[in-house]
Length: 123
Image 1 (tube, rainbow, N blue to C red):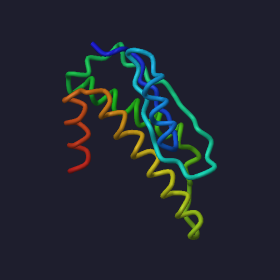
Image 2: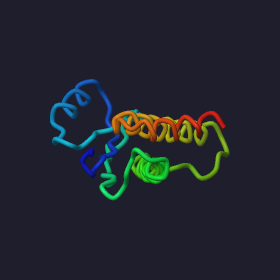
Image 3: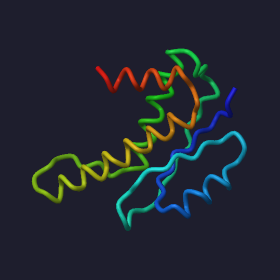
């Protein structure tokens, strides 16, 4: 079974990517998003030691934990869109969240989790 922590990290730049991959502890997964320039880099660990990620229920619960962590590290999420600047902020948030979720799901290497995410995408 995989280690029980899945850090959600928002990083930028190829150098950070390769450094993070090389430095990650055994059994932990680092997920990378694409925040806009000048954005603070945040991370959050997601525990799934209590889940069987090979089952649909375990995959569903883990997905929602990953999504919540991605929302947190990509915050602040724009509440309302009144103008182009608000829209651009929303796009930045959505891309960061989307990338963080997709990379985390990919790094878990669970068919059930990947299937669950695919079902959500194609509804």
